[in-house]
Length: 148
Image 1 (spheres, rainbow, N blue to C red):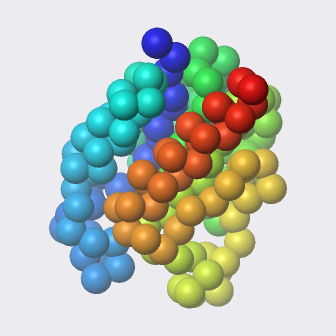
Image 2: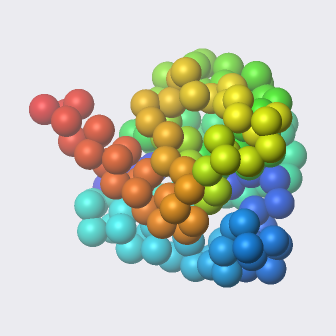
């Protein structure tokens, strides 16, 4: 069974209680369970990690990227600051989908820029926890089309 890498960035461990008006009531465990179910139905396993530390996320991309078929990431606040995450995905060459619970373009101006946007095969945002499932579906579809 092929694996997909799922990465959750800073503060996403607080989902369900952190600013529920912006991020919803779903917990990270709720999201991970839904992703695991969807991935299994499509014949994929998941490697799931959350970190509040940029360097740890880079290490995870480097360690797992070459071994997985694709990646899904919610870089959270690192979206707007991390050239290192961008460069890590470029280095491993794995297709990546960027997801966000909220629509970053409807928020503060500093959140409008994503350092991953130009290396991601797609972005899904603004649909709360469903953004993850939509992003995963897009990634799986992309992989199926690439396999021909």
